[in-house]
Length: 276
Image 1 (cartoon, rainbow, N blue to C red):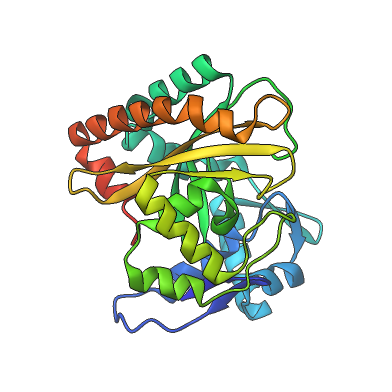
Image 2: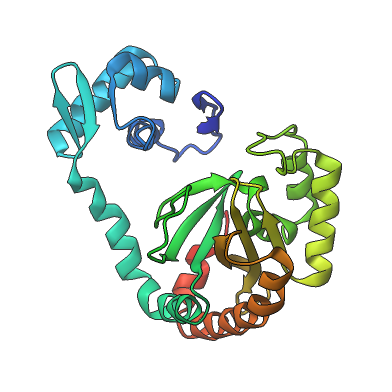
């Protein structure tokens, strides 16, 4: 199995006899492209994925023939056809009906960006996002991933995981320091998780990037399992962290409750959001 690593993807074996490593390798090639790597040569793809260059070449050639990747000279890049995967998920899971109205209401009332995210290994993955017209240093969209430990959304999501999962995550410390405020010490993170479970929210100030303050709350499914988190995020020039928590927390909890009620009407989405 290919797993995320600081340098790309690292292969590990799966004991499942039904597991198709060839499919996994092709998907890892698609995932290797991102904002920092919009186009790559074969050698770069091989490094990013951890694949043998010959295997990476076959994956690229197959994806070119299927229309998901284009080749320009010696370099490869994604084609718009890859959008069908994301749009199929959003439409089939009724994200627009379940989450977007409540995130838009948060945005309209507060002027903040509002998002719904899930855990994706050691990152968060934005599933729904409503932005404002204000310029921010660090933009986000549906599909954006950020390090879990550096965000209020991520810490909320990890705090409610089983103790074994939290211990495994903390064992991977030290974590990337994005700013001077980023919490990278495992003991400090564990204490933060305990506080989140007690108070039911987390707030981050200048942890992912300077000038960003946010507050997040969990979203539970019908079995009281945390399947997602929502937040409000804005510039520190607009509001203090204390005032953000005081004014946004009641609104976030109300929105989370409305999304939880919607998930009871759309259980297939709740099942999809569950990590693992």
